[in-house]
Amino acid sequence: MSSLTVYHEDGSMAGPTITDYDSITRRLAEVGVQFERWRASQPLPDDATQEQVLDAYRDSIEALNRSFGFKSVDVVSLRPDHPQKSEFRQKFFAEHTHADFEIRFFVDGQGLFYLHIGDQVLLVTCTRGDLISVPANITHWFDMGEHPDFKCIRFFTTPDGWLGEFTGSDIHARFPDFDSHAAACE
Image (tube, helix red, strand yellow):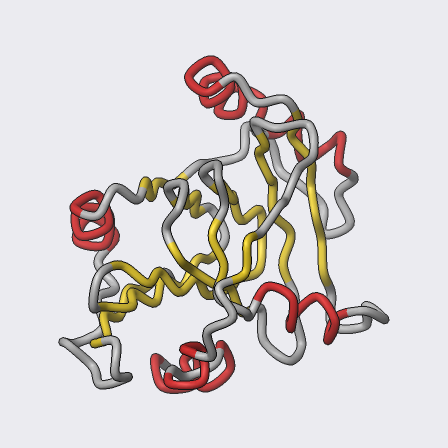
């Protein structure tokens, strides 16, 4: 289930977890974050190829591409048996920014975005069907959990793809990781 939990920068909660989609969308729009839902135009098997995934969401991808002129769109999948899952988790779990906005669409599975905006950190659980667009220069990080299980469409306006500028902060240590947060929201 998609959710939004707002924390103070010191790690204390600023309010209850929000699970209503429209409320999440409105709250994120207040800070310039796009959050929307997409539906596939056709059923997808669990082992869908990149081509099948892109074809199933072609209309939505093309509409987004017309607005932003992406240089590349791809599909990334990380499963619990991936040999580099821990390495990838640590890379994205460090606070960073991008010179460009970051857009992810969750084809399946889930992940947790942490958006550090002002003196708050917004924890956004994205699940199947969720698209999130984090504006350029917003400090954030992402956790996929100890046993990642997701497939995402990634959009890039630069040919170099994902380029993070790490802040060197250890702020992520003040907040629940993906697994702890998911357990608390059940």
